[in-house]
Structures are given as C-alpha cells and as structure tokens.
Amino acid sequence: MSAVKNKPASPTVRLVRESAWIRRILVGIVFLYVGGLILLPLGALLVGAFKEGLGAILEALTQPDVMAAFGKTLYISLIVVVTQAIFGTIVAWVFVRDSFPGSKLLNALVDMPFAMSPVVVGYMLLLLFGRNGLLAPVLAPLGIQVAFALPGMIMATMFVTLPFMIRELIPLLQNFGVTQEQAAATLGANGWQTFWKVTLPALRWGFIYGVTLTFARALGEFGAVLVIGGGIQGRTETATLFIYRALDERQYVGAYSAAILLGLFSLILVMATDILRKMEKTRYT
Image 1 (cartoon, rainbow, N blue to C red):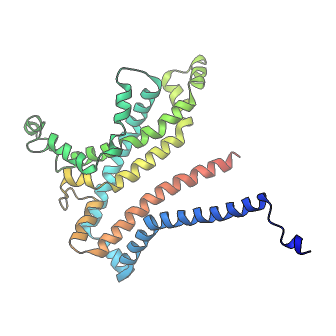
Image 2 (cartoon, rainbow, N blue to C red; image 1 turned 90 degrees about the horizontal axis):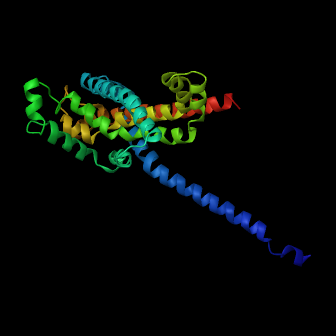
Image 3 (tube, helix red, strand yellow; image 1 turned 180 degrees about the vertical axis):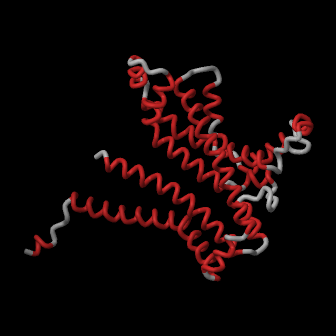
C-alpha cells in the first residue's frame, strides 16, 4: 500500500506538470510585458484625464484649437490613405509581377521608413523644400510653399506610412499566383476586369489591413510633421503636435484627453478590422 502511494510519477505525468508550469510562466511574462508597455501608460493617461472630471475633458476637447488640430490630422490622414491605397497597390503589383533592373534595390528602399527616424525625414524635407533648400529656387517663383505648410506635412506622413500597404499586399500576391488571372483572360476578361473581379477580391483583407495600419500610423505621426510643419498653432498644428504643446504649457487635462481620443480611434480601427474578418470567416465556415 505504501509502495503504491510513494510510486514516482510517470514521465508523461511529469511532462504534463512541467508543461503546465511553463505555460503559466509564459502567460505571466506576456501579461507583464504587454501590461507594462501598454496597459500601465494607458492607465496613467486615464487617471490624468479624469483627474478633474468628465466635464474638464469635454471642455478641453471642444476648444477651437483642439478641434482644428484633430481636423487637420484627419484631413492629412485621409489624403495619405487614399494615395497609399492606390500607389501602394501598384507598387506591390509591379514588384511581384515584373522583374526589372533595380527592382531589388527599390524593394529594399521601401523599408527605409522603418529604419529611419521621423525627425530625420522631416529634416531631409527641409533640406529640399525649406527657404534655403535645393528646390527653393524652383518653388519660390511659383509661389508654392511646402515647408511649414500642409504639403510638406502630407509628404512627411506619406514617407513614414509608405511600407504598410506594400508589405501587406506583396505576400498575398505571391501566394495568389497567376492561375486564376490566366483563366479569366482565356474567358475574355481584359486586364482591368481581371484585376477588379479576380485579383482584388482575393487581396481584400490585405488591402483593408494595409489601409487600417496606414491610417493608424498617419494619425499618430509626430516627429516628421513637427520638423517640416513647425507646429504653428492654428496653421500646421496636428493632434499630436497639440499634445506636445499642451504638455509644454502644462495643460495636462487637454493633453491627456487628446492622447486618449487619438489612441482610442486607432485602437477602434484595428479592432474593427479584426472583428469583421472573424465574422466573415464564421459566415463561410
């Protein structure tokens, strides 16, 4: 009887117990890591924003300069998203379907915004379009202002959002192949009909994710637009630049409230896309 009770656990039982402990440790690490990087800062923002009550938040967000900053952010983001959706799709298509001299170099350059500081991007644009920039002699006689104006801010945002659409679509185009496109061509479809009715539906979720990530990144851009736009209140101040100015002027409730609203909007974009994709999968299973 005693021998039965003291019988050592089998290797399988020990492995299951060890796996359970390892799983708990890994889950704990995930909670600590994600919670420390995301949940704690969000909690601090919420505490700071609600410190003076909901009325103070609403009052801060309805100030004319705050609404103008958010309007400018939304305007820039929409222009950038539409542009990247069109040209990003074209670039991804060309990279996958065509081979030409320099294609590998261009493909590598697409990832430059991931490795380059946005502040450097803004500075490079200043060197090109600033008062003493390389292109100033051409732009000045035409009355075109890029630096410290909306065009420069749009260009800076386009640069930092360049890879998202392209990198979402390239793997899908590679996996999709050309068989279905060739079948459509044999049935009499022209190039545009083939792309619109065969290729694009197969790429739709990569396209939607690319648009979502581009939009979220454009909403949160700070460094490049600060350098090229200057953060001029009422003219070139976006939502992120307002947050920076509000913190500098110790308008903490306004800064916290704007940061929460901006982050919440980006979070809703990403979560809504994921939920819609899961709903579609459920519908077809």
